[in-house]
Image: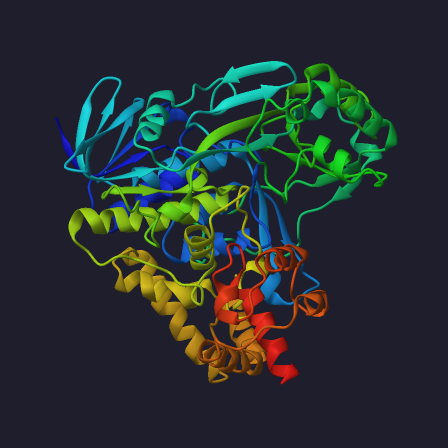
Length: 569
């Protein structure tokens, strides 16, 4: 039986970042996956980034992760979201060629001599003395000091499409049943969550001439702070269409067969990315819902219709697609479906993403109740760093809320838990003026260097760009990269607000016993969402300290309460 410092279970976005991060800290790593050819595959949307999510991608890159480099290598459509708003909430997003993205991830992993990839199914954890001691697979047993679970939707995964029921984590891929049963037998706090995917369309059967065209950004910005070794792929345009009243009637007629409405699915789906049947049911007064038609690759005729995730039957999906402008003759290549899977209550984890009750076990991605590639990858990096630290007796690596969006996400998960799949939003970060996507390198790469997480080529690039920042701050703009120049300009523009924010945060920490406004005043407080008002009304706290312990109340909401209380005194 061979020993590895760290074993990573799962080859998706969380698992690949976890394996690479553990290896960068000096660990010998075994990456276990059922299909090695699908390592790094984009299982749903062929895109990386967005508002909040793009911030995570830049932070992963600042810590020498894989995702941004792969996104640049595969980018066939670039779009800076929220471009008309302040830089703090702008979100870089790219459409990626699926094959090129997967190939880049696999190529980057091959650069790590200390990572061994084995194609096998993890059946059970080997436990000894209440600690993780190894992993038993279908054909072997591997000894280890630390295991990172990055199982995605495969842990107890079950697929739903109309009346169809299939076991699987993705279509045509079997679930992880044995591991799921073992985790449940350990009396861990496990529940069920749900996500879904839309049908894939044959782009050759779409009437593109009738649709609104959405070109790629003219400016050739990149996701990674490193210069790409090759030129980016050619850029493609996306297109926009909408559902209409006829399509909504088709959906309503098919709701009886939907597993969401028939009670077959017990898990909650993501609030901010609902299925099309959920949209029509919840927002019945809307005359249509926007659909973005996104090409899946330069050499691939498949198109991803973003906005119509569904678990309706094949027949209803055919009728729905046929009712949409430009898609009347479109052929469905793969039908949409929902997937329900096991997740572990993240409140059972600490900020290292380590399980309290089972030393040596780390968790990342959808097993922690999150949704999205970017959220999974960021957790993979944190869990991988700390799995290696556990195995090699290194200092833990923890990012706090004031340092990065990944710190916000981990803090939210482990302190507040989830009632639905967690998605990163800029509104979750109370320090978002300082946590811009463009300054992630400045915020995090130095920490990565100190923690032994960043390799030499990244360190050298960072040091060179730090020199550029110093010159730009001094007014010397010769040989300063454009993105560095813009970062320094934004720092100067935001400086007064950041200084004021720092003072407010320090004062708020000193004023935790301040009484909060009465419940009937909550709707009039700027910055409090409807969700926060509902949680506070139910719990009825009287002080900031009490409010801070209400499950789900965010630090951003506490800040809004404190500011209102100060103005009222």
